[in-house]
Image (cartoon, rainbow, N blue to C red; front, side, top):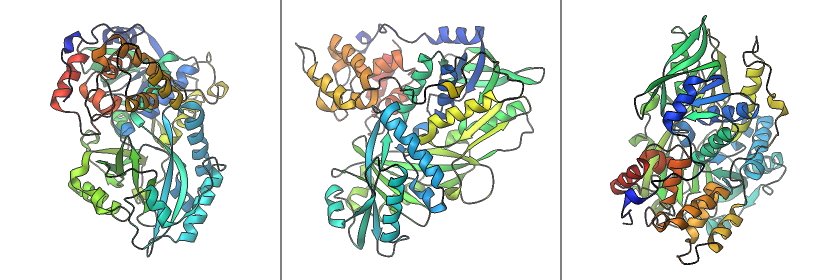
Length: 534
């Protein structure tokens, strides 16, 4: 096991351009009056804060946990048009999703999104025939202007070459289409960074304990720093409740009689070691409406997802034995048994989809954004899809701009005047970045390993060079955190100094992939916590 030899000597001097301390941020938050206070650091709140700051508003963003610490880092990791929506005739929705997907993967964050080919197997006796699915993937690719190639049918033999674990018994044909995938936690963190670069003030691990009122209107919040216990408050002209599964909890702080506005659906996933290379993902129809995914992701295999109503405490959501059995059973429709051994599972996670309140099957409910205005003027927003995170941020800003009485004032740029495709920090061609990292290694020392260079390039883009410089200046930071993962210790110091990491989970679960690989040992966790305290 490769661990730090002398943790106290590492990363004790934050790099130039490091973040302000938590105490400095708390003081800044408590002294200023903000135009907009966003409560909730999931991607919906982050995107709104980003667009609001770009508009010239004074923006604060707080979250009781880590940024993207709940649902926003528990997705299926896809940027996709939503193939299943074609079944309900939602052609316009699919076209809009494709537009956003292409914008993110081509212009906004090409360093964080990867094109992914999907195989949709058609089995004898399955819920859909080959002709229907062939026409479906053709229409799907047409709505994407054939930017990912033309959806078509493939022979089972060719598909099995690309996915050796594909079950070929009774396999009639395979439909092919293209989408994109990402590391959702990294995408969210880069968007936080974009918001801060635009002037926003942000603080994670800061819990709202109450709301501030002026003449009956919500004008701020009382907060508690979970890392120190310090209590402070924030004043704002307008407060946006973007707390996801907790949105009704905050609405009741505003109005104890507020009726429920949402319902929750749990989506569970499993992460497994791969038994062979996968050159494509599988999207297997389970019934008329549901698809189960098998996605090559972070050198692992991601399986999921479930979709069932959830009525418990959002903070207690977890993967149950029933979830695990369901995911493995559904995956077995199209995947060989050897790849589905429970011994291969390294991690499992569950998130909560926020759906509009009302009756009906959660799997058929629209993934639309719910916006409500409370008695005290607090705007609450929840729901939506990762793929359209930019669009949701713009949509929320438009609603804020149109509020009666113009609580945001008049002195800012309307969101419609902003550039349409603002890039996220680190934008670069990841292949070029990886090449540079390999070529420009330190002259006297060992060159960076190819898997580390690729990992940095596809998770940080051009910001990888800052991490490489830290590793070059301190050989201890150039060492792998674990021999079976590409990450190096410089990433931990970087997460502390530049990415708001406060806990071992912040680093191991969301800023690196150690946890999802099943490699976050007690020893590594202790060393990470030691570095974070420096």
